[in-house]
Length: 250
Image 1: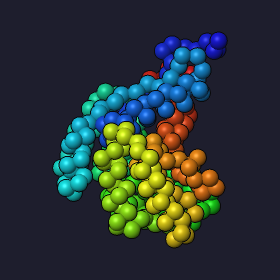
Image 2: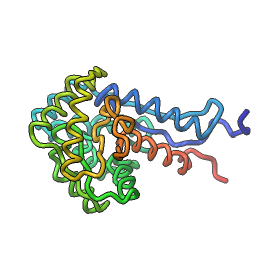
Image 3: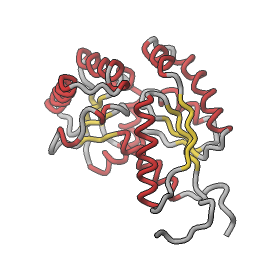
């Protein structure tokens, strides 16, 4: 049995901007609850609010580079999370941070950027050149690579254009639907080996579904940085460290 606690347990409410994709959203929800339950014990887990978008809208906005429309669409969803009482907001998509991060910079609600725990982990590992997998906008992002270089001291390298198209297609056509094909796994591992041959000392799984297909077990001795797992850990750590705004004064 766990020690007696005041009820309801005072804790931060996690606002999850989900649906991009629904598979990533499920993984975040389950992993956050499991991680917080491991810390709290008993039957306690996370308090969450989820606003899940229509991925069909996301696919069109991203593939057609309609970033301003995407920003307006997601801003309204963030409004809903804040209205529901979220103490912090997280986005389950690396790609969508392109518009979500600037939106959150203008708001007071706490925000945990998905790149920060990954950058911190790579800096702690002392690595200086890292391969990057993700959607095409993520792999081509000069802003993301500059952020890692300026804030965490390492360079990222992306696949060549032919491999960018392969990695992106598998994400949109397969992983967001939880379609896991052996030939796609082999293709991803081949892309990673090409990055390794170009000097990469590890690889960032910079899309929140990629870990469904490949992981550290597929690349022994080659560091794999899973943005999903690192983001979840940072969110859970924040919840455990920060008292709820509803907590009774001591």
